Image (cartoon, rainbow, N blue to C red; front, top):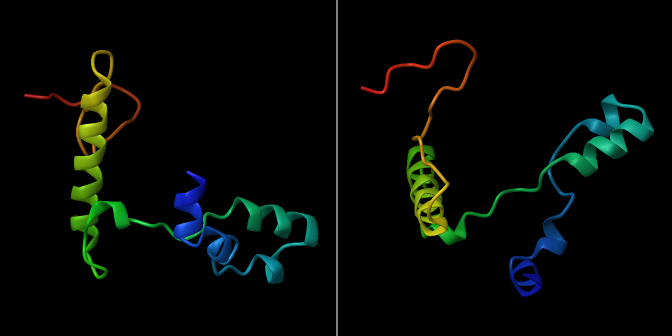
Length: 94
């Protein structure tokens, strides 16, 4: 894991997400918000082109997630992508 983080340049990216927290929040809160902010995502493991569309990224992520859950075996379920979770009665799966 450490080798992957070094090779992906995590030490150069961490904390570099563009925000306006310093200008809009007082010091203690801005520091906390900056530390909570995620760094840019790396999707190199998906094997897509650099300029992949959102739909292509979603499909590749869902494929990897489905395969991962299938490898875990019994006791895990893949309901589907963009499945609405909410209160009340669930929609029919017919």
